[in-house]
Length: 83
Image 1 (tube, rainbow, N blue to C red):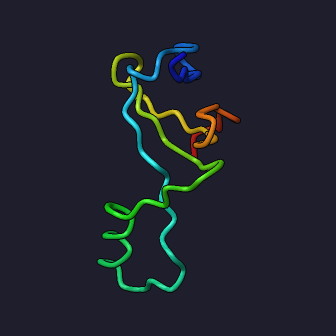
Image 2: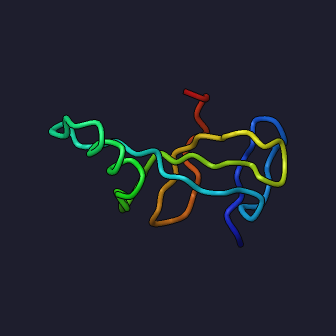
Image 3: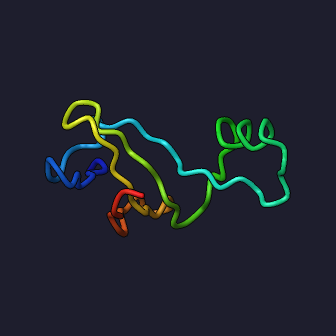
């Protein structure tokens, strides 16, 4: 079965309706603005286990949905409120 994401506005929808984006957290030792921006844009944690992600509902309400997903089992653990 394919991953299904619960959109707060549209209900449970197939993953194919969304675009994915990991919520980045740059290392604390980065101080230069360009380094922080580069890290946010290109570096991915690729966490094994539970990580926080942002999904944009392209073929629905066109809003962001934030959730915590277990990358090992591909199960949505928690849907979060928008930051």
